[in-house]
Length: 184
Image (cartoon, rainbow, N blue to C red; front, side, top):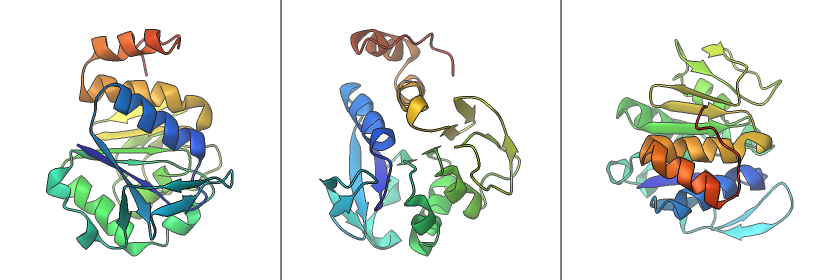
């Protein structure tokens, strides 16, 4: 099972593309709202989440295989959430999958887990560690990063490939009429 965290001003498409495609692939995913079960996206749409995250006590990471972090303008606020940063560190120390898109790789940098890693992110996002790679999706071990809205479906299919199988990701890409060559 995987978990995703939505904070206010998250990027709708990045979050919903990942959630939708993973659930189509029958990958279990719980959606946490940071601080509330009602989260307003950057598009001013209010989403109701399944769980609320206030502190690391609100989640048993042993129940999850990975954490998925959408980006958006609200990432700056999440960067100041020490409980979320601790949680990211804990997922990393447990060698679990960590996905971040758009500005969310900044959270990985703040958590101190990009040192010696390759990553990608939204152009202009300030990241001080790791090696930036100008690709849509970058996989470095258990850390997967992606650039933004325009790469969300490709990133989601990459997650399906890593979590389930390449064959399932390719089949799913055909079902959603997305021309994906299976390369990230």
